[in-house]
Image 1 (spheres, rainbow, N blue to C red):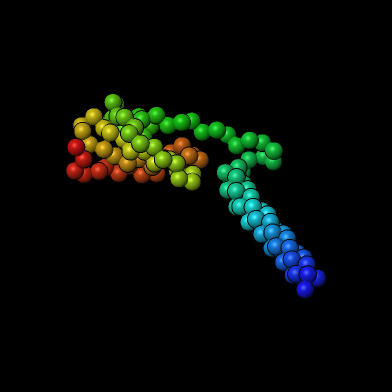
Image 2 (cartoon, rainbow, N blue to C red):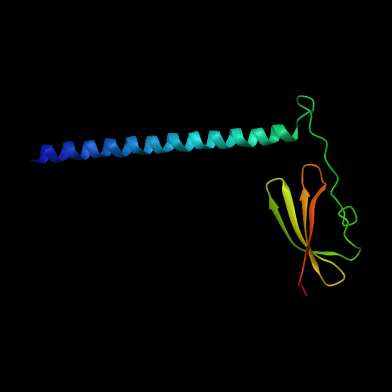
Length: 117
């Protein structure tokens, strides 16, 4: 009876070890997929640049570059991929949502919010 119990414990131990190996391999596989996606994004940014050369840095846009009136204040800022989303309070009491492309530094959209205090 004890030998059967030992065999069952050994078999279950081997199954647990095999399961952990499979989980580890899947994690490595998913990590490699993520690394490939990230490198594709980096390649798109550096497209047209010489091999080994760093892409030219873009200037950070100022409120005047974004077409906002002087005295505008950034209330909230969120990065989403290669975009920067700004919620800006303008001097006339309203708010605007400004979306900036981080790769080029240019404005993608400037949306006025109606009914803001």
